[in-house]
Length: 117
Image 1 (cartoon, rainbow, N blue to C red):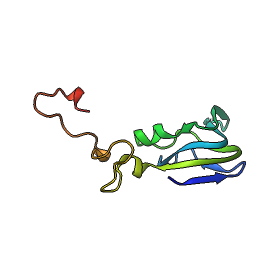
Image 2 (cartoon, rainbow, N blue to C red):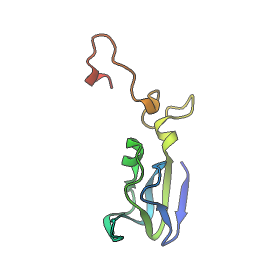
Image 3 (cartoon, rainbow, N blue to C red):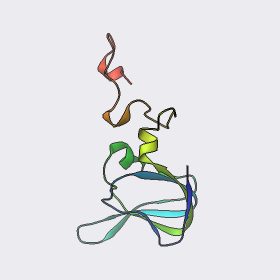
C-alpha cells in the first residue's frame, strides 16, 4: 500500500468526488467537513494517527460525502477501492475476494439468503 506525505492545507478528497480510495493516517491531522448549500463548512471529525476515513464511501460505492483537508503535515496510507473490493487475480485482497462489485454469490441449497455471507 502506498504511503503518501501531504503538507498542511493540501486536500485529500473533495465532497462529491467518486469514492475511489480511503486513508489511514500515520502521522499528522486531517479534518473532515461537510459544505452546506449556503457555503458554510461544518466540521464532522478530525482524524490523527491510526485513524482511517472514507472507507464508508468506498464500501457503499457512493461519492465522498465530505471534503478532507490536511490541517497539520500528514503521512497516510492510501488504499484504492479497486484493490480493496476486487483484488487482482491470484491475490487474496482485503475484503470481498470473489464477490466483486456485484455482491456475494447466491445462497446454496438449504442455506437461507441472510446467511449466505
